[in-house]
Image 1 (cartoon, rainbow, N blue to C red):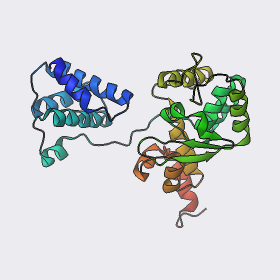
Image 2 (cartoon, rainbow, N blue to C red):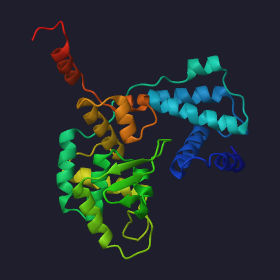
Image 3 (cartoon, rainbow, N blue to C red):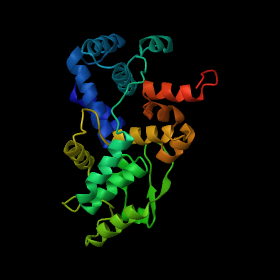
Image 4 (tube, rainbow, N blue to C red):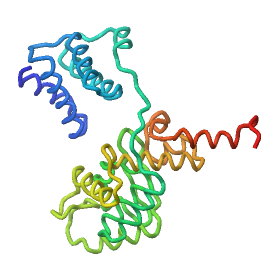
Length: 279
């Protein structure tokens, strides 16, 4: 695959976020290394690569994502792709994988642990727990988005912008933090360099907090809070449509995947409400 091919692909995916662009380009390069450098590729190369990934133990959901990335690559390069019937047969099936998430008690511990941290860190974590907020949404917040007690969140993933009413403690933290700011940077949250916080910075901050509490495990990041809040609200009786609006998810189907129900909990609840089980 020539450098020109990669440049062409990069130039056609500029509608994606920089992080997603990097992931797509990396996947295309991994594909090239696996099946060899060629001037053009066939559907047989895709099948070969999927078999390689399966042999490496990659999950069905991961291979499904790779399939979508390669389809975008083939479409842009105008190379033949599978027929609809072939695609239906070959595309890996989506699985409801159990992903790591923070339980209600763990989020309570997290809120207690941040009491000794700077006001900015405390405010960010409280916002993430109060309304399950994505890293990119925290990063993009501007000072003008905060008008006590309201915080306007420009949701990503095609969600609708929402206005969150903050609790008094979070407002006090934000007010105290902003009083220390003498810069003209429009970002609500900035790093020690005086610039808008980056996604890697947010990842590092959250991982450090989890490690201090002994809660960190592979795959547990900011989305672990989103999964935890969705699960907590579901257990409290909120409907998936209500959780979707509150958390800025695109669809109820997405919310459904975020809710992590454990078998014993489901069984216990069903037994309590099942009309034919004597209690």
